[in-house]
Every structure is written in C-alpha cells, then in structure tokens.
Image 1 (spheres, rainbow over the protein chains, first blue to last red):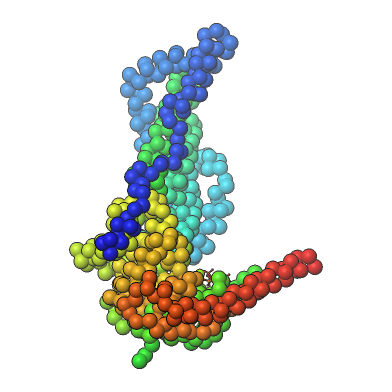
Image 2: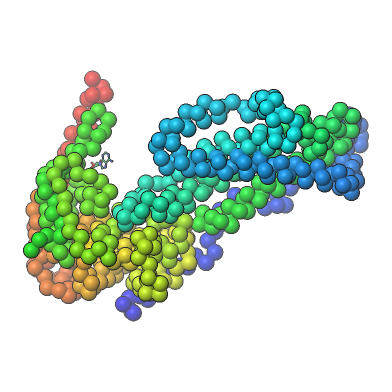
Length: 270
Length: 273
Ligand SMILES: Nc1ncnc2c1ncn2[C@@H]1O[C@H](COP(=O)(O)OP(=O)(O)OP(=O)(O)O)[C@@H](O)[C@H]1O
Ligand SMILES: [Mg+2]
C-alpha cells in the first residue's frame, strides 16, 4: 500500500475552499444607503422637503447622540430586549419541540398540522386586542404576542427541516440498526438544523414587529412606546431615533443568529 | 453447510401511478459464508432493490429472505450505497467512525485506530478534519467505503461502490478490497456494471435478467487467490469468462431497451388515444 498510497493522496488539498459569497463586502453594501442619506440631507437643507416630517439626518443623529446620554434611552432598549428574549424563548422552545415532533411522528403531524395550517395564515397582530383583553397591559401580554408569532414560525420551519432530510441518511442509520433515539439525534436533528436556523432568522423580524406593535398600544416604556409617544407629542426627531434603534436591533439580532449558524453549522460551508 | 444468505422465491412489486410495477420476479439465491458474490445486470433490473432487502431497508412482497447472524458482536450488514450517502454534518473522521458509534461499539483507542487504518487505505487520512462539502465526489464515495469497513460487518453490501471513481482510484480500491477481503473474509454481495470488476473480485458472478429481474445464470470464478489483477486481465480464461457473460448480458440489455421503448410507446399511445 505504501507506494500506492502516494498515488491516492494526490488530490489537491482544498485548504481554503472558495467561500460562497452571500453577503456583499461592507463598503459596497454601505454605498447606496449612504447616497440616500446624503441626498436626504441636501434636500432637507435646501428646503425641498418638509423638515417637520423629514428632519435632516445630521439633526437626527444629534438627537440620537443626546438621547444615548439619558438613562431612559437605555432602559427602553433594555426593557424591549428583555420582553423580546422572554417572548422569543416562550415561543421558540415549544415551537421547536412541536415542529420536531411533527416532522418525526405521523400522529403528531395529524394532530397539529391542521391546527397550525388553520391558524398560521391569520396575521398574529390581529390577535393583539384579544391578548390585551386576556393578559391586560402588563408584561405578560408582550411576551405572549411575541411567543405566538415565534411559535408558529418555529414549528413550521423545524417540521420542514426534519422532513427535508434526505431519506438516504436515515437508510444509513437504519441499515446499521441504529436505535430510534440514535437515529433522531444523529440524523434527524443535525439534518434539521439548517431549517431550524432559517426559522430563527425569520422569527427575529416577526418578533420585533409584534413587540413594537404591542408596545405602541399597551405599554408605558420600551422602544415601541417611545416612538408612539414621540408621535403624540410631535417630537419627530425622537421618533426617527426610535426607527433607527429598531432597525439596528433587527440588524444586530439577525446578525447574531447568522453568526451562531456559521459557528454551529460549519459543515454548510458558508 | 448452511448458507449465510438464503433468498427464496422473492418478488417485489412497487405501487406506481395506475397500478403496480414488478421489479423482481422469483429470485432464488444462496450466498455461502465468506463468499464474495458479484451481481451484474441491466440498469433498472432490481439490483439495488435486492441489496436494500438484504440491508433491511426494503421488504420482499412475496417469498422470504433469511440471513444468519453468527456473531452478535459484529453488525450483520453494512451497506455502501449507490448514491451519495456520507453525512454532510460530520467530518471525514466522524463519518468513518459513525457505524461504530451509532451501534455502541466504540472501543476507545482500538476503534480510533481502526478508523485511521481505513482512512489511510482509502487515501483520506489527510482529510480527516474536512467536511464533505470540501471533498470531491470520488472522495465522498471512498469515505462511504471506509465507513462500512470500519464497522467490520458480517456481510458487506456494496452497490456499485466504485462506479463514480476515476480509473486510478478504482483500480487501487479494487486491489485494496481484494486484499482486505482475502485477509478478513466477510461475506460480500457486490453489485457492479463492470464485468471485469465482477470477475476480478468475485467467487461467483450472477447475471440478472432485465426487469422484472431474476437470476439468469451464475458463474463460478475459478481463479486462485490471492489474485493479481493485472496478470489476470491478460489470461485467456478471464477473457473467455467475461465474453460469455457479455453475450448473456447483451441479450438482456437489448431486452431491457426494447421494454423501455415499449413502455414509452404505450404511454404515448395512451396519451394520444
Ligand atoms: N420506491 C420505488 N417505487 C417505484 N418503483 C421503484 C422504486 N424503487 C425502484 N423502483 C423501480 O424498480 C426497478 C429496479 O430499481 P433498482 O434501483 O433496483 O434498479 P438497479 O438494478 O439498481 O438499476 P441501476 O443499475 O440503474 O442502479 C426500476 O425500474 C425502478 O424504477
Ligand atoms: Mg442500482
């Protein structure tokens, strides 16, 4: 084998496989938003647009800066993030479990799938009045609306994740007489992880949307509340700062999920 | 002596749109312990279906299959699939170790050595920390060969394991398989479309008919072991055997083509009529 081994070892070692470029490099990605901001700034300064509605970006930035030096700003962010975290966990964990169960067991699928199919198309935001009615204006109503939105997305994506695992991988395990549990943990779960992460990524946006909406109408702190309040007293720049914070949160959370995905699923080669 | 594998009157029907399709018809076959059996036959004649039955992945519609499990400490079968089957979420090394781990047969250093040994044999040792997306198609196929061998099964089921490999690797792995088998002697059922390969490796070669597949004829391969493949290829006996098989197979391939053409024109007639 020694002499033959030399021959069978001649593959080119793909030390650094060319990464699939899913994101634009940062400078390129920043170009068009930056251009828009500059245009907006010019338009505001020259009076082409109503600064009452569209204050110049530099003035918004200034307000932003001032606000970051108040404790209220940070406590708003803190409270919104903790609502998000609690609601997300309350929805994602059961959603994941139900989704995996649906993917793995036909009986679970026949119980839950019709229910989920019936409720899923309903925009969850429409449930907000009912949830406020049941849970009142306290923290629980925020948790619950976020949890509901996240639950359905997680359930559906985890189920799809399991069901999309190619049958051949189960065949390998079955041929080796792997036990049921071994099969779930060595084939179904790892195979479903990309689907689960897709679910998480989508959930971030939905959770943020539902949370902000809930804070608009039923809160007296939090980012959504701050935006709503700014509108009611016509502090337009504060409102814009709120938009920016919400956007940044969405961006950061999505990035965090993507980071975790690359970290925990290196085998996808991204 | 009791055969290792006994297949009696096995037929297999698949439900397809508008009826059933018969993939296998009355297959009768015995494989002795430590025999190397090769199966050749036209594409679509049910070879993979038969192998999947032996691997416990498919049931016979009628007839029965009995397999003797002599040593409970070894897994009964390990299968090398025709299509790509390495786990994308495991590294090369963990893929190779999978069989031992999933069957609770992992024995620490001894098992790790075994994994290393077969990764070496398949030329993958340098790539032990790679994920499958970083491997070529041929490397992935070699990895599934390693994964099966590592488990040390009583019966190795191989479905055209070398079909996707380049000539050099194919030759190396054929020789390596021959040597390993001569050394370790498990029962092997080996599907191939290469008559050369079948005669070089097998103790016995079965030629299957076109669908619905059944055993057309079995050939005993008289060549002594250990075999020198390069030398064997020069011998007249070798050519005589492959020639005989080819004649038989050609009729079947032609029959299979005619069948397919027949199915197509029927289909067309139905659609037009
Ligand atoms: N799950 C299935 N449902 C319906 N038909 C099937 C199924 N699996 C296999 N068949 C049919 O059974 C026949 C035999 O398939 P099989 O995969 O065993 O062929 P094969 O001899 O391995 O062919 P090849 O040499 O091309 O791999 C084919 O005609 C195929 O269409
Ligand atoms: Mg096949």
